[in-house]
Amino acid sequence: SAVISQKPSRDICQRGTSLTIQCQVDSQVTMMFWYRQQPGQSLTLIATANQGSEATYESGFVIDKFPISRPNLTFSTLTVSNMSPEDSSIYLCSVPLAGGPYNEQFFGPGTRLTVL
Amino acid sequence: DQQVKQNSPSLSVQEGRISILNCDYTNSMFDYFLWYKKYPAEGPTFLISISSIKDKNEDGRFTVFLNKSAKHLSLHIVPSQPGDSAVYFCAPSGAGNQFYFGTGTSLTVIP
Image 1 (cartoon, rainbow over the protein chains, first blue to last red):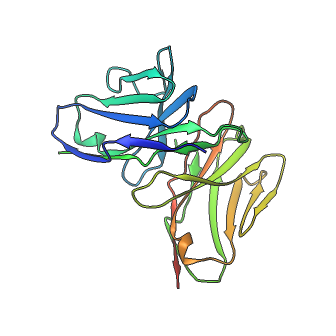
Image 2 (image 1 turned 90 degrees about the vertical axis):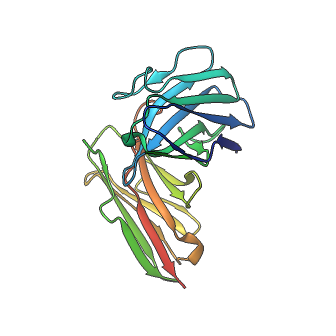
């Protein structure tokens, strides 16, 4: 298993500002994932954060809006840039379960973001 | 284009009875299906999974059934307990690490 923490747990931000969300894992992992869950919607993969290389973004998500850092194997940040109310969501990081079958993932507790 | 649908946003069941949560998908390339459980203010936690080569997988009180021809899977919880009250997501996966989460079903087990 893995213990994953996220900071902040929640925040209320003004339109046009940026927020950086931190994800810390208690073990070294090659891949970390960032998801978004908009109100009433399913979880959507934003990007895969790889240590030592650029993050890989899914369709509909771009680096300028969601820059990601991955400085080491236990830590990653996701920045939500130039926020608008449509960015109000829960943002979650996750890591693959070591030794588990086929892509099971551990999720962090999430960051609840409200943009006014 | 929503590839995964959980058409029941909520479900209430009496304690001790069976809970049945349904999930439909459209992508025939999905070959591994996971169920996640989520409590408020917590991230989803893995519950049970099934590979496309099986039609049933059982783990204690939890059983997942897969009907590939109908592109349908269901999660059965029996007997249901109040601690099972949570939001349940089905999450099929194909190649790679992309998961396609359903919108979730909020289960309430009434004591």
